[in-house]
Image (tube, rainbow, N blue to C red; front, side, top):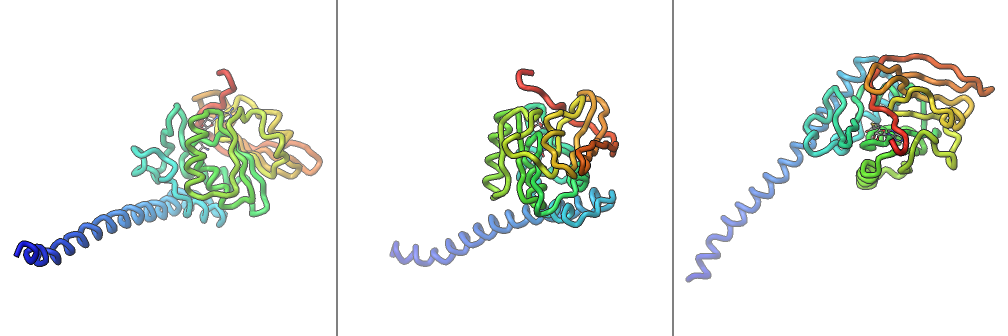
Length: 244
Ligand code: SAH
């Protein structure tokens, strides 16, 4: 009799189990579709509306999961129009700035790109969607470790990372078609100029720490001549040197 009672309850238990599983499943789908629509809005209102028109950049910004690169507490704000803290006093740049700098580099699937300031790894991931190879250097070891983990988990095969002072660039891998510096320096580090290919482009914020800086586009001509162009006023965390 006892056994029979259990058999009677079995369909109810099964039903409850199915409802439970379905609710878990639909919750996670709901979340990722929230991120997907937030990302679509980000591309449309923050990027396309501000005249970023390079289709490669729009595709990359639309496909990299920015919420994977921010800390748990900020995930819901991942697609907002602003930078966010990533720990150790550093920030992941505002989406528009990431898109603007990426567009300025004029890269394609043949390009080898050097980034100074891996931070969260987000900018490297955006570059990796467009370029052939991305080399990225981070001076803060725990940030280097964390971004490595995220980039491995999310499956980027064409990114190489280094924990070092990016002031010196990455000589063994030079020259680069493009260099992007995502921390502000008082001057353009000469080793980075040296490691830029002839005909290459570098994008770097130049100016004093925590004051208004200028985003500079540096062009190395076919003969090695250097020209610079001021693009915008920006505010980046400073490029620090080892031992600072
Ligand atoms: N590109 C990053 C933004 C990082 S903020 C992203 O997408 O999240 C700038 C980063 O530059 C910080 O992580 C900081 O630690 C790093 N940095 C500062 N000085 C550096 C240096 N000399 N060499 C390498 N990285 C440096």
